[in-house]
Length: 210
Image 1 (tube, rainbow, N blue to C red):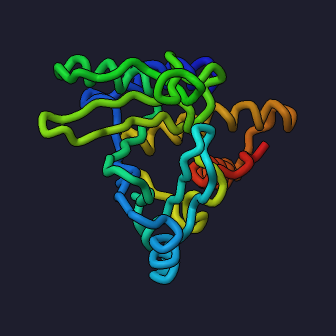
Image 2 (cartoon, helix red, strand yellow):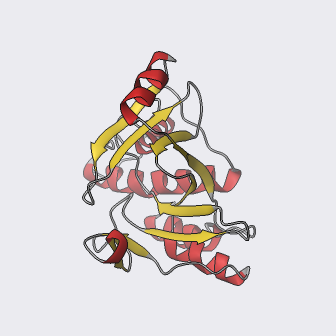
């Protein structure tokens, strides 16, 4: 299959009738003492994904229970985070459902630590929208296209839907086409191995094969 055929099929087949996947990623739980809570969850054997100070001065501490696709943040107020691969498409879908959703924003020195619009470089983890339900529960959508190293178990690769798996396969197919060009244009008989390595590395946030 040529690159043009792969690209055309990707453009036709990638959208799904059910809309954008919105995966529950993080539950922010309020704690009175971050260090004490950190010691508690570390003692449970949960994986520490992050502990750093954000640009606004707040501290981000994230743990993931063993085998869980979702994580917790230790914070001062409760909130729920969803991840999406396309923040603009996700926002448009929420608007279609009548949700009063914020404009897309990215972290910065603006009001509330926000600047209007997606991350200027469209970096993974950098673009957000938010909304609340009728009871005031806060939801935050974050665009993630490539995982940072250490945020997922590298021995486990999972896909929550056939559309997600299909999209990963087509990204691997496009990348493999470039791989075959670099190796002289010869058909790679071991393409299943190459696809598998690409898909696992992409989900784990590792360097992709060439």
